[in-house]
Image 1 (spheres, rainbow, N blue to C red):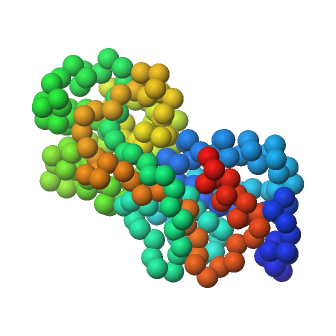
Image 2: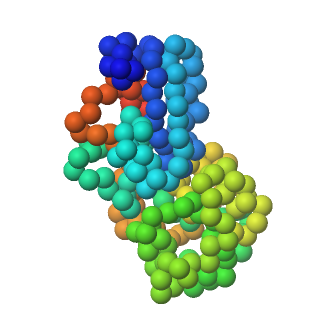
Length: 220
C-alpha cells in the first residue's frame, strides 16, 4: 500500500530509498542532498553507501528504488535498466612529495610494490586490474594496507603517509586540483574510463519522487 501511495504522490513529497557506490557518493551525494533539502523539503530520502556488489544484492531484493554506481567491474544483468552517466576515471594517487613522484616514468611500475595500497572493497575484476599493475600473480598478493568503504578516510591516509590510493579522479577532484594528490602515470583501465550508471529494475515503476531524484543526479 505504501508503494502504491508513493506512485500517486507528486515528486515534491514521499520517500525514496536509493544506494550510491563509494566513489560516486564522495563527489555527488552532498551536492544532490543540498538541492533536495532546498528545493524539495517535503521529500524523505534514505541513502545507503556501500560497494556496488552489495548494493546490487539489495536492488535485487527490492530494498532500494535505484542505485548509482561505477559498474565497470560488475555489469548489471538484463532484468535491470542502466541509465548512463558521464564516465568516471580510476587511477592510483599519491600525496605531494611522495617518493614515487621522484622516479622516472619507466621506473614507477617496478617500484610500486614497495608501497602499500589503500582501497575500497573491490569486485574481483577490479582486483585483477590492480594485480596486473602491481605485477603480482594473483589479487590475493596485492599489498593492501587499508581497505574500507570511506573515501574520506582513504584520502586522509594517503595525504599523510606513503600509501598509494586507488580511487576515481572525480571522488578526489578538489585534492587533485589543489595539487595535494597526484595520479601516477599508470593506466588502470585501457579505455581510460569506467562505466557509471543509474540502475533500477526494468519492469518496476518508479515513483515521481524517485524519477525527480534521478533527474537531479543527471543534472549534476
